[in-house]
Length: 409
Image (tube, rainbow, N blue to C red; front, side, top):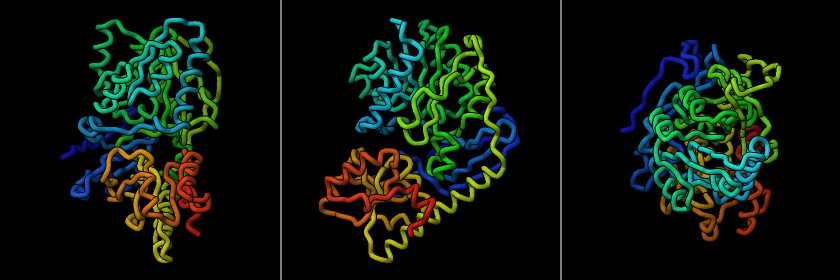
């Protein structure tokens, strides 16, 4: 049985001034796919999202035991041209902005997956090292000569590196920092592992964009905190780190809801820009977020019911976190015929929470549908090109973001 630990204090400031802003009932892990016989046996637990009124960090207040879960974790975007272009740009920008004149340079990526991001750094001369909890992904990375340590990054990791006198020019986390149960502890560890003038580079889901797009599906058991520019800046300052760059990559080249920042230890920052921080969000921001989330779920349910009523066959596209969590939140997700994934992890698997079968694109040849609702909207152009090969026109392909905002009419 999966253990759940409920917290009583803010993850960041240890305060008790917390208020609940969202509740999603009986939600699964995003990556716990099942065989047919195990449908209904998956982990399900409420996700409650809180705001700390003292430090303004939005967060969950429960930790789920993830050691076994991450051991078999397989999520990768390596097949996507958009993702690969982003990874190349990230490596090259970090190098050209901060290390162009340095010949010997090193990077540690925490949550390094299958090593595709580190491969881009290795190509431009970095000594690379990954730290990844998934044994499957670690094995893939090591097989491809991207040195990767299999395990969860903890205080013991700090002791290991200090014993080896190993320090880094860059510590990188892409969509990993907001998974850490104790992100403050991680910042303390990072400072001790950075070389002089080393940088911490972090990519997380931007709470402001989550609110704008109404992406409640990003409230997951795997996520612990949700930041925007203001709360991230204040949070890092608490740990003697200053954010020096929010514009490492242009907005048009980022992945959906991406907030990227570069930080240095305060002692390494020679000139501190005197910029006014964005103001804290008002209570109306959080009230509207809650209201829009529940409205979005209702709109999706109406869309699903309407299409079933008129006999239209609809499939979903994208078995990542967005698809899994959105479908799990709906009371009538079984109206969808199946959930398409370009590269499913295996055959005959089903999405947790909804129980929908995960199929590949070839499945559409013998099982055509009238309309496809895309959850992986950040890759919409790629998805449309792939679906066009199977005879689907743009007017048959819709984004779930639009349905949540505007309804099905």
